[in-house]
Structures are given as C-alpha cells and as structure tokens.
Length: 191
Image 1 (cartoon, rainbow, N blue to C red):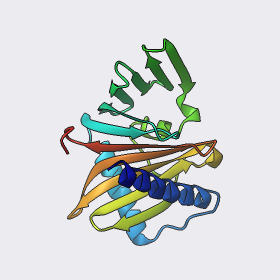
Image 2 (image 1 turned 90 degrees about the vertical axis):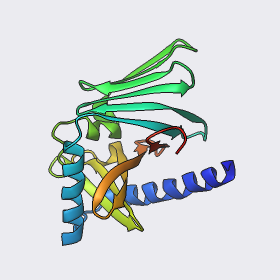
Image 3 (image 1 turned 60 degrees about the horizontal axis):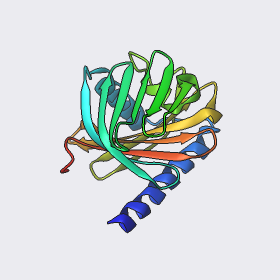
Image 4 (image 1 turned 60 degrees about the vertical axis):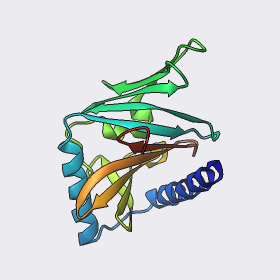
C-alpha cells in the first residue's frame, strides 16, 4: 500500500510541477476548458459547508490525517495524526498550531497557494490564472496560480466528475520553493 501511495504522490507531483512550468506561459483555454472552469466555480461557490476526511502527504513524504472543514473564506484542518495539530486559514492568514512541539507557524495567505480558495465568491479568472486543465476517466484536474505572482506557487484542484457533477477529491499545493503537499479527501476514514 505504501509503495502505491508513494508512486501516486510522485505522479501527482509531476503533474503539479508540469502545470507549474506552464504557469509562466499564457494559457489559451478551449471552449471545453472554459465550461469546466465555470463548472468548478459554480461547485465551489455553491458550497455552504464542506466537511471531509483527509490524508495529507508532506513534501518529506510524511503523512497525517484528520478532518477538513471548509466554509467559504475559511478552512480548518483538525489532525488526528499528528494528534491535536490544527491548521486554520482565513481573514488573510494561515496558522499552523502543533501542541506536541509548541510550535505555532503564521503566514499571510497571500504567500500561499491555499489563499486562492479563501476568497468568496471564488473567481477563477482575473486575479487567478488557470494554468492547466487535465481530464481523465471521471476526473477533472485544474491548476491555478495568482495572475500577478505566478512564482508564488500553484494550487491544483482535483475533482471526481460523475456525469457532469463535480465533487472535490483533493488538492495539490506547490509552494514557491517547489515543495509539494497533497491532500486526498473522502467522506469518511473508511473510503
């Protein structure tokens, strides 16, 4: 199991890095791309509260898991492992609190690709550039960057696409130092 997860993380990292390389170029969206961007915007803006189980893979290969709660403009990750750790994002800030070590990390969301999800309503144009769109069997993957600061990082949204209905299935964050963090979502720990 761990070997397939590692292979999968490497493949996802490669896709995210390829999308990041494309971020420096002007991307022309096809009519299908524009329709998919509109569907993703409608899905994200239609959320009032999203609560999902997540498994996170950090850049060093370490893993954690817990519960994600997203209310438009605010995100919270409550970790079961590492126990008690929380990440909150909203009001322009990201705060990571690790009670096991006593460490508290604060940063402005303007310096994190996660900040792209903290606006409401979410608009995937203008200040946000869609750098790549990939489609697979029942999947849609869309990479985003800040239009005026493409080098600040990349956020890739992964969706299940079931007969046109989107469901968020994961995030891939590539920071300004090319470190890749992956979050995989499901409705419960058993899935």
